[in-house]
Amino acid sequence: MLSAKIANFFSALGDETRIKILALLYDQNPISVSDIMNRLGNITKHALSYQLKILKSKDIIRYHKVGKKRLYYLSDEHVSHILNDVIVHLSPEGPCNGELNCSDDLNLHMVIE
Image (cartoon, rainbow, N blue to C red; front, side, top):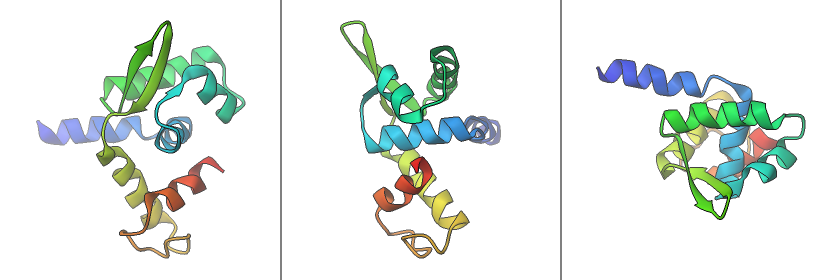
């Protein structure tokens, strides 16, 4: 059922670390695990791998290999639009003043900072 797929998708977004990962991937697409760890700060490689696995299993992110490195990126631009719409909804006084047609860049930087 479509409703179950939608609920499953949104369940993957129900974690602050995963939201920050998505904001990083939007900002620096594609990005390696070590770069994500450096930007997030206080996260172990094991914990990050677990979060990436969840996002990948819902086809929210994908990766390609360069040598032994995995470079992660958003599966498509719908993911960044979903994040942007939620940010606009929750922070109408933000840089976009509640306008959905505002640049996603402005909103997503609020998540990382």
